[in-house]
Image (cartoon, rainbow, N blue to C red; front, side, top):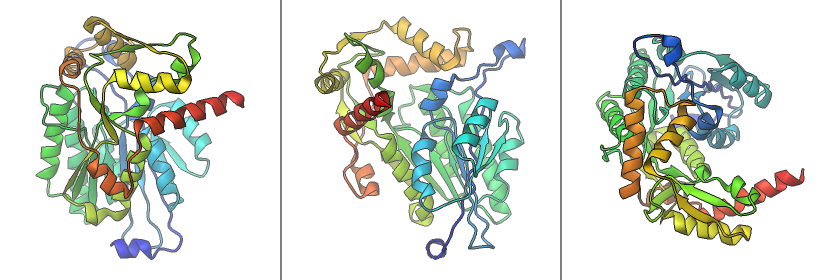
Amino acid sequence: MASDRQSVASPSINWSLFCPSVMQQRPGNVGQRRRLWSDKVRQAIAGIFWLQLNPADRLQEDYIMAEVGKQATALLPNLAKQWQRLRLVCHSPASEERLKKEYPKAEVIRTDLGLPKEPERILKDATAIYHVEPPFAHRQAVMGFNMIDAAKKVAEEGTFKHFVYASVLNTQLRKMIHHDQRLQVEEYLMESELNYTILQPTHFMFLFPVPPMLAQEHPIYMANWNPNIPFSFLALGDLGEVGAKVLNEREKHYAAQYPLCSDGPLNYHQICGMVSQEIGKQIELKQKTYEESVQGFLMRLYGSLDVDAESIDAVERILLYYNRHGLIGSSNICEWLLGRKPTTWLDWMRAEIKQIKQQQHH
């Protein structure tokens, strides 16, 4: 299969990129219970990608992708070097309009994966899927199970080849609800008899707010947890390269699990110190109270504090866990997959600052 792909002279790609609705539902007024993620959060969290191939025609390879945020921005440039045709599937009219502008040659489709038959419909005739659930989605594990079931049905028809699941680092840490749910999805996938690869990214570097640190005369960073606790970090560009490598090489990565870290462990005192030195201003580091952190997370995710108990539990538990334990891993696997040293926090920050300053001059 890999040799067939390499022999293609002019491959085309059909990406399907959609923004699934992340909604909270319980009895009562359904309209009042539905909560869409803010545009900012959708940009910060990855979604779901599909890869579709017509095995009967080696001159036409189609990828279908669905996404909620930034993983697509890192993955697409790496795949666009080889593939041409895109199908992009989104949830909102705003996303549909934006995608049509950014990818004028692509087919853009707007849909709602909250509808139970949508995974099966979109995965029809697909050969691979790159799947990520939003980390605090209501009934997150069920979303993963539904995708796996749809892929199994496609596989029974003889077309499906590869399920790539973008999970989270250290799913064994089950005190955090979203880790526990993704662990369940990993188990379900391993027992599905599908060919799979599990990617386990840690914290993304881009979540640190560099622009306001540059803009403020006396910058203040408000930490959501104990700033002395170390974390490992992943550069979005590194994940994009790894994701493209796994999708393109396919068989080489069957039955693999890849914990992905670019740099660390680092605590936020160290990070603020590095940023302070680069921007020439001392960043004052403060820690929010636990209640402030919980409320801030809920507002950013749902735009309201009136959300279901499961979503509140998930946010509360992750903040408690991070405040005591952090989240750390090794960069060795990422280095091996990339064939180079992963991006350091300092390198990422310098590139981010350079890009911001360039934009300010235009």
